[in-house]
Length: 494
Image (cartoon, rainbow, N blue to C red):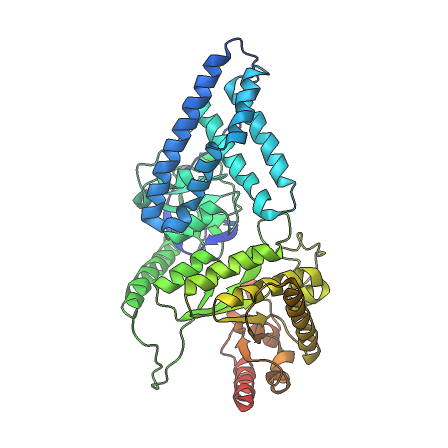
């Protein structure tokens, strides 16, 4: 099977698409710097562009609210508020009246000023506005220069572009957008979250030249691969995957509202794994009985500063309140040098899977860990919350965690801040943890078995290495024995 040209990118939205490429190339544009005589003309141009932007964002809000819900549409409200912000507008107007700048220059300078101001602040609640300022400023400049046009797509295509804004995305008819390939963006950027919510496959980190327009392509949002000019056999393979995905979605919907019972008649809880509040909303729509794993890495990725205790609390509280009494499990930070390492100043390692990751990062960065623990404890005042620790290999690590948890509660007590009780559990994802699971079971409230990493470590193979995929077998007898041992020890402890 000839796979054609394979381009390795990053997964953005886990689904598949086959179709013709449409490359929307971005032209670099620098607004002209012109000293004007008649400032009234520039003021009118700015006011007209500002009103057009507000109108455009209002339409984008309504479309997004219909397609993906109010929460995903909030970004457009934030942008509208910025366009109405007195200080932002006053600086632009002053640039025109006092410095006699043309409107494009005045907007560009004001945007640069506020972007740098907010981006430099330590409070992430404030500095996060820098991205919004950049987006709004660019939109105003595009309107002033007549270049604020979404990609014109009149037939189903895979859209490739260096970047895409949320407002551009919602202007494209859903039936004409099979998938998206972008150079920029992250799992947690607004446009990627929006695409994921409405089921559009996305691959990130791939640049596509304009000459590829019209070429056939396959995008794999699960592996992060893009295949250009694929052969019929590869197309057939992905066509089957797309059909299976659609059939599975349709088939599963009939189980919503029913009890979750095994073929042996045993009732079990069906819990969801999530990476964001949007995932939690979708999980609850699909009748999840709670959240079994909240990957808190979303608090650390796609940013330049560490999250504060207040940010942890606010994010986790939203999830807990959304679940309205259903159980929520938060896994503490599980990053290593291969992902998110720059923010934590982690050195690149030859084998990150066996390096400084999981609980090892938390225990050697206590301030970061304490902020997260306190945020989780405070969120527990609003619902049924558990906390889970990754990559545990010894009882000594649990004792160190217990000490820090007590310290976190003492600090909250002294600050007069309310918090709730949390159950504490650990991930069993290393052979070391499985082998001493009898000892560990006596020290925690629950186990969660991480079969991906456990399989990798038991079988001594890198699960990210595609050449070893045929050897990666979670049902291997050695893996199953480890799991059985862990389950037996947990049940024995009660």
